Length: 385
Image (cartoon, rainbow, N blue to C red; front, top):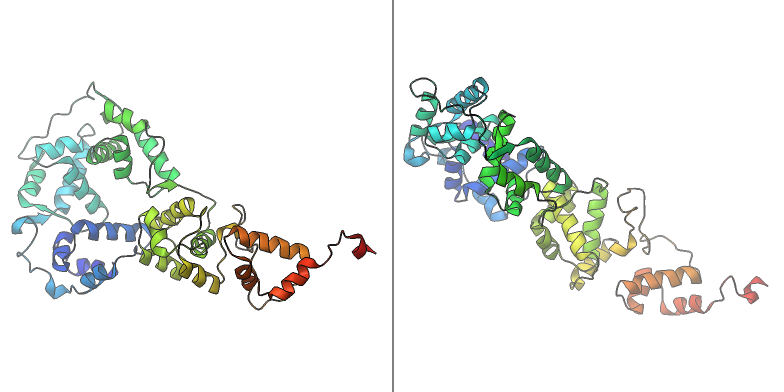
């Protein structure tokens, strides 16, 4: 993503869609990756190797020349002047809605809302030249749309905005599109209504849309409840524990809608993005209660000393100073007692290990284990004597 940002800085006249066309990727994919990088404080989300190779192969010389190959068949213009004009009009005339201005200029509200977001975020954006001219003409050569009072079929948008914000606080990875889809409303309608409310709190929202959004109390996957107590240490331990349970990164990535490469990057960097955090927690809730099918994943995790889920308690897994139970540190001498060995074998058996496998994990020979198990316990009268 840093490479693409550099291209856009060198050629601000080129749209993001033009860069995507040069790379042979979808413009929406490239834009989503850039947005994730901006939200993650500069750390991009993981992308496929093919996508990364295509993006890195694009140089400044590959971009269309000024006046050639731009969006909309070469009939596009920089959206910044028109967007600044629209923001000025909305600040000067609080009764004007973004939707009314978009319709007066012959644009869809969602297109105007997306252009405003990009310009306000400092991203390059191009729109049709004809649309830019119509927007700039509003209030001068073209009349402004009538400022109307709130329609009778609208209600105050403040409760809806607060409810949406509350859902995003409760859930990781909850975007407006997911909330709108869960409510059964059009995503651009909800986006436009909330944008209008942000610019002018007096603006309302359709009462039916408001009722559907306010009726959403739970969100489906891929969103998962936000756990404020989950630390980065606990997140990494959860991912390692799933591997120790026999789940491959490919299987772990599926419930959370991510990729094995993204989880591999998380294990390497140990700096989770919101998407990675959401994916691991979703997989933890779905898979941690049952063993996975991969003996290879279990063997590799054991070689790295990764503890399985049963080695942790929910109140200890997120504490950096806590150690897993039922595991031994390689190279560390262990003072075995009959009670301790019984406890360890019971624990490892619950994980699905056979007796020989459990003894190998504990680095004990069968003879030594049998001697310990046959030894009298401290409560035995003969031992007390």
